Structure formats: C-alpha cells, structure tokens
Amino acid sequence: MTKKFFLLASITLLSVLANAQTRDPNNKYLVWTNNIIFSEEKPEEEKEELAEEEEQAKGFIETYFRYVSMCDWKEGMKFMVVPDKKDMVVRTFADSLGRLVSSMSLRHKIMVYKGHTGEGDLHERVNFVCEDDGKTYYYELPTATFEDYCFSKFGVPTLAYLGDVDTAIEQLVGKKLITKNDVYNVDVSTTSYGYEKIKVPVGTEVTVVAAGVGTRNYPVKLIVADNSGREFFQNVAISRTNSGMRDNEFTGDEVKHTFEGSFDLLGDAALADKEYDKYIGRKVFTLYKTDMKLEDGTIESIPRLTGFEIKTMHVLGGTHYVKMTLDRDGKLYTKQVTFQQESVIGDMAGEHEDYYFNLFASGNVGTIKGVRKEHMNDIRQGVVRKGFNESEVKLALGNPNRTLKTNKTTYSWVYTSAKNGSHSVVTFSLKNKEVLYVK
Image (cartoon, rainbow, N blue to C red; front, side, top):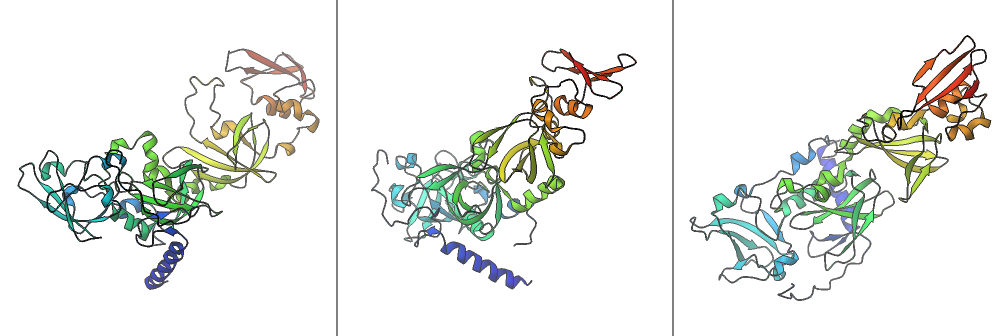
C-alpha cells in the first residue's frame, strides 16, 4: 500500500473516532469519556482563598515522546494552563505590566513559549504569548538564573506540555493497547476534573479512541475503549517534559501515571506473548486448591484436579508474570502465574502456588490412564486408600520423595511433609501394584 493510502486511512480513522467522542467544540485538547453529556456550563468564578501502522512497536515511545529539557525549549512550543488547587493561591504568571494574573482566569488557555530574558540578576523571565487572546505573560524564576534553573525538573508551574498531547493524537489514537493496571477512570463532569474509578482486568485489549490534555504532572489524557465499547481513561506523563516530577518520583502508586505503568502497545505485548503461544488450547488441570478471578472481578476457590482449557496468555509488562485466561464449561477465569522458579523460604507449602508447573499439569484429568472415576472424590481431597494404583496415588499425592523396596512382595513410596518434615508411607503389592496400606 502507498504512503498516501495510509495517510488517507489514518485521517478517516481519526475523523470517525473524534466524531464519536465527547469533545469541547472550542478546544480540541479537552476530551471526556462517552458516558457523560457535554455541557458548556462555565466553571464558578475563582475563590481566591480556596480557589505509521506497520512500524514495530518496540521503541515507539522512545521515538515519538522525547523528553525536552527546559534548556532546550524552542520558541513556538505550546503548553496549556491546567492549574491545581494550590495554583489558585500562588499565582504563576504576570502580564506585560507586571501584575500577577489569576491562574483560574487563564485555565485552559494555550501559552506559546517565546524564549527567556534577563541578565542573571535573579529576575529572569520565561516569556509566553497567549494563543487565545494574543496577550503576553511571563513567569519569573524564583531563585536562580535561567541557566541554573533550566537543568532542574521544576519547569513552569501549571503548564501541561501540548507537544506530547499532539503526538498522542497523531500516533496513538486508533492503536491497540493492553491494560497493565487494574484501576482506571471515567469522567463525571465536563466542567471540573471529577472522575470515578472503575475496575478493569489486567491484560484487557483496548483501543485508544481519543487523546487530550490531562494535568500538569500527567499531561496526556488517554481515553481507551474495550471490546464492549466501555470507555475509561488514564492521565500519563510520557516524555515528562515540564511535568514537574523527577524520574525517581514515579514509584509506588505513581507508576500508573507513566505510559509503561498503565499500558503496553499491542505489538510489544504480542512479541512477549509469542513465547507462550504453545500453551494456548492446552488442556490442563489444577494440582491443588487455588483461587481464580472471574470476568466480573469476583474470586472463586477452585478445587484440586479441576480441568480447564487455556484460552490466552498475556505477559504483564515490567513483571515476570503471565496472565492466563482459562475456560471451564464456557466460564472464563483468569490466573496470574510465573514460569520462573523462586526461593520457597518462608512459604508454608514449600513451593510457590503461582509457579505454573507447580499449579498445573497437562491433560484431561478424566481421561488419565488407570484413574477410576469412583476414586476421584478421594483423590481430589488428597486421600489414598487401599486398592489405589500408582497413577491414582500420584494424582492424589504427587511424585514420592523416596521409593523403597520393603521385602520380596511389597514396595513403598515415602512422602515428606514440607511443613514439619513428617513422613507418610504408601505400601504397594509388588504383584498387582495396588495399595495395601497407608501409614
């Protein structure tokens, strides 16, 4: 296909997606999830005291969202005034006459960078022209010269960098992502920053349907939709240009406000998932009791020897865990597992439940050779009785720790408890290889 075709297709897609969104008709950067009706109601007056499609996904963020230090800002760079509550008290900008200007009066105004002035006399200014009214404004540096100040992460308060937003609109709208967090947001108002939190299963495939401005700290608001059409969003700092936060501050709960903390590009995820394609469609059964999550988020306790078919395997980016989707009689469950064996020190069972090969065995438990249906209830409980054969004992208790030949007519399997070191001995008849007794 030609580049021209891709360009036309992209423009058409963007147009369709944009038309489906709740968007301020006067400001393309203000977007909301589709669960609310747009209102042109103006916010209350300030209260001073309170007041390309074939491109490989890998490296995508590094290519399109580069951090721009304040030292390297170019005239013409655009920002939007997005004040926090504290900015209602501490005014950021002054006008051409030197008068401090209310942050609320500049809310959602677009500021165009016009360089800096001053001679290192502690009164250096960072200059802007307001795109909306053509007036000039400046931010006076608080304590240092521009050359000293620009290397810090402080930046200019209240300003959300629109370069990242424009790039997100051009490069991310229409792309497929995989969710990496389990909590996202839906809007409740078009005239405030009100939102509600919703639960979203980790590993959900979504499409970016809109991008707009978020906050100064997290400038890009990404609105995504799952396969049912449900929309939700996350505010993220992608390049972190002028976000006002240091890299080491994006830890703990702040990780979700990085792109990598909330989303994986489908291409990246698909590349990682490919390693686990061989498991998809495999019949497995649980080797002991475990918990799994249903589609609605509820937790269900799953007994030992419950059979499933693996439907999907998604790598959870930034971790060594894989999210499995499993089907049992048309009912879907999810379980996070790891394929990396870890230390079991402190684990009461002496093994990690989330280690795939500890938790699952391949096959259909109902068709294992030698296993009789009438013994299954006992086997599920880990109980072995007289008359059980080797296959049934292994299914009930696992592989023995030791095998002993006790005499000419019998042999024993010894099981050592990881909890207290005690032993259980299952003795078989050498003649028919069935259990004679357990002690």
